[in-house]
Length: 528
Image 1 (cartoon, rainbow, N blue to C red):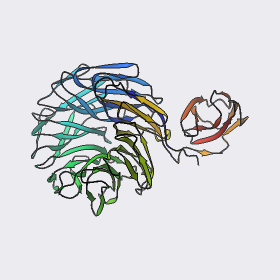
Image 2 (image 1 turned 135 degrees about the vertical axis):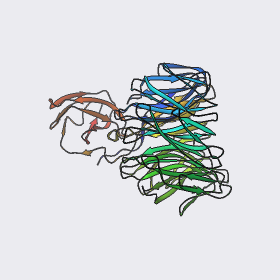
Image 3 (image 1 turned 180 degrees about the horizontal axis):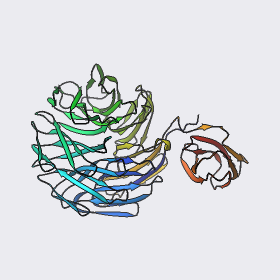
Image 4 (image 1 turned 90 degrees about the vertical axis):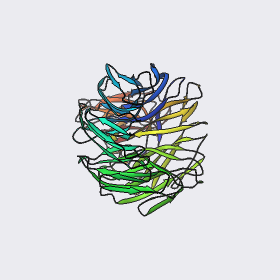
């Protein structure tokens, strides 16, 4: 079985002289990644430059599998605007959500807020053209935080609202107190279907949201005091507490689970993901002591230091495990992705030294980015850092086609940041710039070696060798990977061929010839 460790394939910086934030990332099955967030003044994405219409504006950028910018587009107006969530729909078109003030322009579509900030949702095609955009809200601050699609191709948005918010022009919801939770459903063409609210008299918010194959929907966030989710209620005497809630396809609440601590403790749920068996994993951060059900973890640092948590439930709401990570500093989990084998990959930031199971990572500055893998049983298989000498944050993580064996990440960095041997430099303004990165991670499905599909002559070689192959039913890509699993180059193998000459200029070393689609590989030695 061929496996590789974790190595960054590429990392790209974007931004400008203002403060910029890459909030969320999604990927399609072709290895393209899509990043959204906000920028100030002007922001550079590769050779493309976006200019804000006023304060903060929304951006959406597409990278190809090699990290090259395909296109970048913005939406904005004179006020402050931000995108916070993104997903790919069934057509592999990106859909984003966020908030805006005043008037915002999505191409030729103009939305106007009813109050301070309103929520928006906008669908684009894969060329960066907006297809439709809708808004919802009222006189208070109303935010769209995350977004997903369900089995009926509908779009589901999670967020928070204050006072009264109007959806679809005719449907209104009213908060019980300070700020409440909403989940809204739109068709793939932008028609409003329904909205459900939850919460109580305190501060209640929804962050990440995911949908299962049967239409059940899960979302996570924070609440204060007592909160109602339909006929279900939860209570905590902590300052702020976490929760995970389940709805059916019609928006009816099925269950809600709360994560609580002591009176002076704080927790917040941020990321959520599903595996192919319907298990739910969530992450976030907490201070003091923190419990889901009968499982309790305790933060390593003092009362005002945060540790990251990750938790796993089955579809019936039965707790499977709860784990923490961190050290004597501020450590927070923001997002995670779960593969079909139940492995969860989480990102966020940490300061000083952080412990992930038996793995220890050390920050090079004030705070660094972390990426960690948990298996289905909650055991940490690896943990990795990236960043520089100042403040660096991981906000989003995803994976597209599992055959690629790659994770895509986004976030912010200050001044300079390293991703293995890749060095990123910001615009020197002393403010935050953005990164997008592709991480090749250890995977057991990358390929069986020595299966006889390839014949390499000579091997070792000086970099020029014959490659004979058989039994190709269709055209496939051949990848040449270095010892860390990083893609060096690739070549198309045609079904009607059985022999080609490979000419490379790569340096001496041991390389792997790998066909992702067939999960087969072979070693080749280059001696110069």
